[in-house]
Image 1 (cartoon, rainbow, N blue to C red):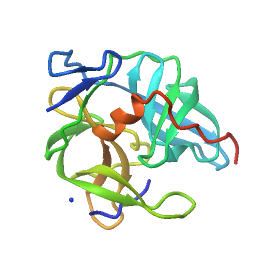
Image 2 (cartoon, rainbow, N blue to C red):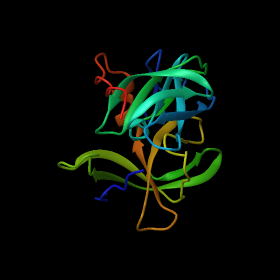
Image 3 (cartoon, rainbow, N blue to C red):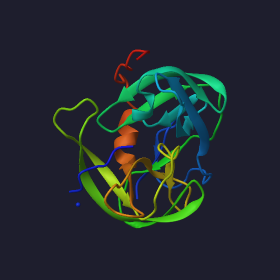
Image 4 (spheres, rainbow, N blue to C red):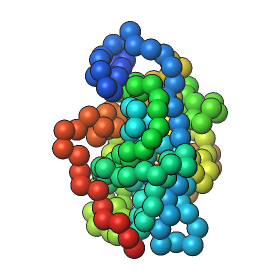
Length: 202
């Protein structure tokens, strides 16, 4: 996972693309993503089912991938956005249409069922894989550490809406992690022409 260089309600339902708070209040379906590739051990991540057959997860776990599975079934990467560290995978999974809360703000949330809080909203400058100029993304600062495999986990508000997706743990501050803001995720998931995914292999 990557560490951002720290800088400082509208609900959208993917699928029907409806705004407001009249939609269902179910929490998103969460899945396990496993990536086999060039390393000796598989990479693990968490995924969010944004629509039937479509999973949102982090892009950095896909480096050197050869095979991707979602809850044990074969998956295919269909879109990647390196700037926000997000990827879309198709797989045989089902779940309710995910609702995104794009009004970034501090407050209580849950991550993988555990209580946490958004303490700040920042513009994070992140060094891209392979070097180059830092890229900027809107991020939530969380007061909870995350473990291996938690990248891609949904940051969920009290109403069940997704407020962000975990992408990094702080290497300099205990019990601090980071999530890309839902506003960034909505633009990626809803895009008509997603970024071409990276090639398979090492």
